[in-house]
Image 1 (cartoon, protein in one colour):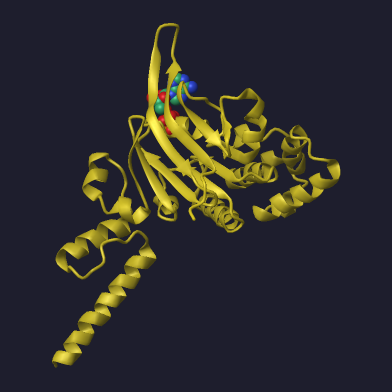
Image 2: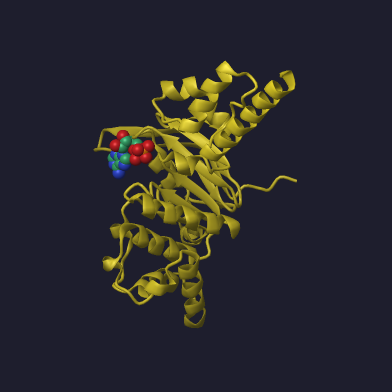
Length: 291
Ligand code: ADP
């Protein structure tokens, strides 16, 4: 039996009101589903509407046409918004804009107070959230002394303390150095093991190739979707869209053109190395047999 979706985006169109007479159309009849526990990556050019779509997933923005449903609740219903934000948490690009308190634990407590978590439960939730992001030792520290990556981990802790079903990362690693990004990816791995759905808007291939599913956006529409393998094999189409292709995928396709038994549906460096090893064995084995 297939699981029912956690989030359903149905025929959503949206534009920003620029002034009294002008609207900038951004999303054009977008539909998608996010399933419990899945890791979905959204890629596309700057300005293609990724962030606008992400903000529809927990009701920060509401559609002008179409509907977004979170666990059966429509994001247009004002009365459901708090509950929706608790189910679907969002972390943004700039770490500094998301932290409100002067001590790490107070920052996490802030969100919990807002949703009325009793004080005795709060301590445990803060402990668990800080542990999940590997920041327990920083509980009493002022957040402004932390690195960008550490601040993002605190922002994530603030969200996961609310026990959401889905975490949306909107370019959450784009301001971080490679160490900060790696730490966030490790946190994402932990959250996936706990069964949380992850939606990431990103242009970092290392985040895309780990996803269960990739959506490609262009001019406010989803123009490609599938597993990373299914998407990254369509290299001509991705080049037309001026999008990055993982270097392992490019090499695999080039090698497949020369050696048809070389697997072309490769997305990670480890898979590529494995396939080169397999081919090497196959070829040297054949030569030994011949000699
Ligand atoms: P992406 O995340 O793919 O870069 P966005 O969803 O951020 O795309 O933006 C899509 C388009 O909407 C862009 O042209 C952007 O300039 C415009 N836009 C985004 N936010 C606003 C806003 N608050 N007001 C007006 N225009 C906006």
